[in-house]
Length: 364
Ligand code: NAP
Image (cartoon, rainbow, N blue to C red; front, top):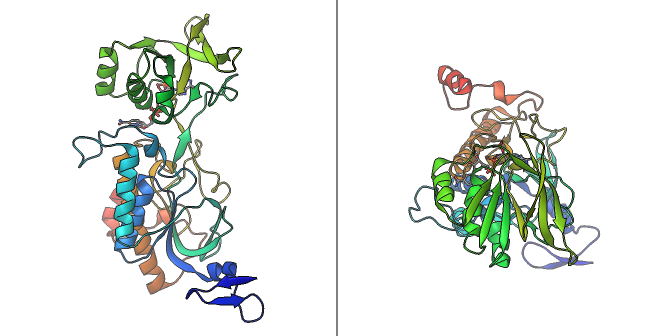
């Protein structure tokens, strides 16, 4: 078998020759960032500017959830707003400008009980790294009712930006009462003639500004105190309606619709971490205020660890903090050697912060 070495020269496998995999195994990184949402790109940017030559592995869902958002209006610095995909490209360009290397690959396994840590990918690459920043984000929660799986792509969708265009002149149902349901419901009014937003309570979770816009929009009608119990189709194999149950009196009802957009929250993408890192009861990584997980040298930022704020702006801040903490960890590795990996660093004073202040940070 013939392969190229780093200088482009061909060499034979066998005695004295290294396979590509062996070379990759020998590539020891200072920091690897997993995930390409706002937290990941910011961690990549800050690590690059700290001369750590980060490798960012994008994951299959390039750009994360913001990349399927039609318009981002509340990320500071862009007073006119911009599209989610445009914002992702700006994040990426800025990180690459300072030397962040991007790999379009998906991580399938991490090993964090021995140092350097190991990262394995779907493209059968294997990397070793002194520190890790986990920014794997979250994915949409499913309704888990009959018909949902069957009609996904045939009228059921989780992405108005991707699929809204196909519902020009149609009637739609949106499920949920949070910011996503209202924001995406408003976006869908560009295409649909009527949107019914089905919410399980009679009070919205969404921000006031979105509520006002939705209430003012003639195409939007709210269906209160109802949950969807099944999604139904017609003889053409596409969505024709939903069955609902009244949460107050249990009464069943049917609503005719051409499509169902589901926005009922998110689940953290934590497949890589079970049995390896501390997760809370909802599956988020448990980090301290300075983004440290329970393994020294492993940090987490964005929605994989944040169950409260979940904003682009907060994810960016957490990605920045994680990279700064990784830098401090690498400096301490150099100066003091490897800490005991079974020690929980979340109990340590924040690196670079005096003990008294560290206690204040931890108490927040
Ligand atoms: P969310 O805030 O968690 O809201 C989920 C909604 O779905 C809630 O109204 C919830 O009802 C409902 N729900 C949950 N499970 C359900 C079920 N099984 N059946 C029926 N309804 C169900 O999720 P999100 O709207 O996706 O927002 C996530 C985060 O991103 C939030 O922090 C939000 O502020 C942020 N975000 C911000 C913006 C923006 O600032 N422009 C845009 C999008 C998202 P209950 O209210 O009864 O719990």
